[in-house]
Amino acid sequence: MILSITQENGKYPKPDPFMRMRPGNLKEYLKDRARKEDVGELRRGFEIIGDIMIIDLPDHLLYLKDDIVEWVKMKHRHIKTILRKTGETKGEYRIAEYEILYGSDTETVAREHRCRFRVDVRKAYYSSKLSGERERIARKVREGERVLVMFAGVGPYAIVIARLSEPSEVIGIELNPEAVRYFQENIKLNKVEGVVKAIQGDVRQEVPKLDGKFDRVVMPAPYNADEFLHLALLKTKSRGYIHFYTFAGEEEVEDRKRWILHEIEKRGFSGFVESFRECGNFAPRVNRYVFDIFISEVPL
Ligand SMILES: C[S@@+](CC[C@H](N)C(=O)[O-])C[C@H]1O[C@@H](n2cnc3c(N)ncnc32)[C@H](O)[C@@H]1O
Image (cartoon, rainbow, N blue to C red; front, side, top):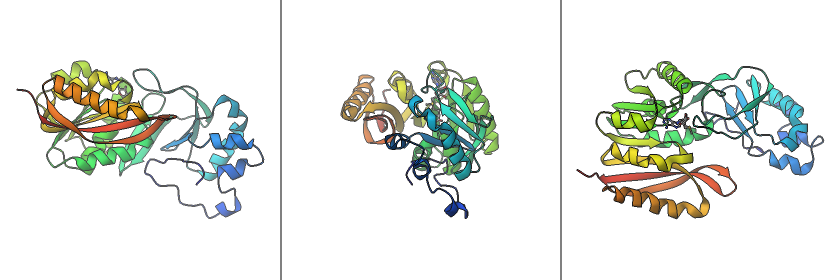
């Protein structure tokens, strides 16, 4: 596969029996249409969410737009809408701007780990690229755990955890009212009403109001996560875990670990970074990292 096209369940569509008659991949398809150096640039720019394909197509490659649309229609027949990202993911709600290249509907149902997530990509954040990470966290959850998901979006972390493991309760907090509307719908769609609860609001106000503490706190908000670690600590039980996501340069990772330890100790907690891993690329040499923090003791 020349292009790294991600699909939400990690699988590619079944090969079309007529495909042999058609161009095998986009690079080949564009061979006579695109400048050679331009084709390589398309590599990281595709994401499939349900039946929507999102393409990162810089302005100087716009001359390939119609050819790419034709290729997608031929090769990924289930795609009903093709969007071009016209701006970075931004704002508190982390939503990107899109231009519609094909189709019209921007609401879809994404599938991952036998869960379904309804989302309008123009109204709320969802990324299929994090589905492997959601499974990794869910598999760590032990029976009966109480889990808090800050920055819950349309519910993928909370719901995948509830479906793949046996927590007693999962609470998700999300600021964007549209995302929370989808989160509530997704709780029903995945039949986890008894376990997962969605709260609309700012974690700064909502977390301190929560009763009791949690065995595990998930913090999937990498762009300004530092501002919120103290809130996660406030609600983590002794011998609990915090999964802290952040963007960092490759050479900054050790510094980030030191910062986390400093934050923990400064607030009277004991703990350590049990493991960390890269889980996505943001820019050249800048990645999304997750730090799995074990809190051995909380202050009295
Ligand atoms: C990067 S998205 C992650 C969403 C979700 N966890 C996922 O993986 O799809 C971050 C989310 O945090 C929400 N958010 C940003 N600031 C927030 C705050 N102060 N309190 C609660 N949610 C917030 C945004 O609206 C956005 O949906």
